[in-house]
Length: 151
Length: 68
Image (cartoon, rainbow over all chains, first blue to last red):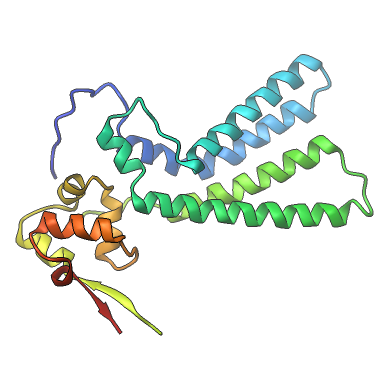
């Protein structure tokens, strides 16, 4: 076990960010389910606006993670670790799974619309969330469990 | 073609008494990256291979080789 002095001990570090990102595959589907019920389960305008804004925030947050945009509030060391080459490889792999899911779901919807009238909102919600959930699950799978030292 | 990147990362790291975390800190990468390179799961870039070799005091050729 090694110790590293942290003058910014009250700030998140690379390890805590990585730990929380490993939770994403469990959290994101639940968040989308909850937001879906808010957006499509209620007819009040305000509820729909709040639900849609919340959904857009979560989706953009996922985009932030997959694009590897800098987290400037972290130290340079933590930013380098979060954005190291293996992390970039994992993000790229997960993003390509997300794009594949987007295309497959889109093709499925195009075929389905020949028989069923699709609601535009539900179609967009399903398309974006389907792709994001696949990408997040792949991301979680590639980042599953921190190995023990020398494992 | 069934080539694989062999390495003596773990052996050398242990010789120097370094943990994976310490080596990761020296190279500014995550411990998981060191772990996956050691296990041959992740093939490092030239840049990381050079950083690892420098941190472990070896040349890249001494640290990595191609296994057929």
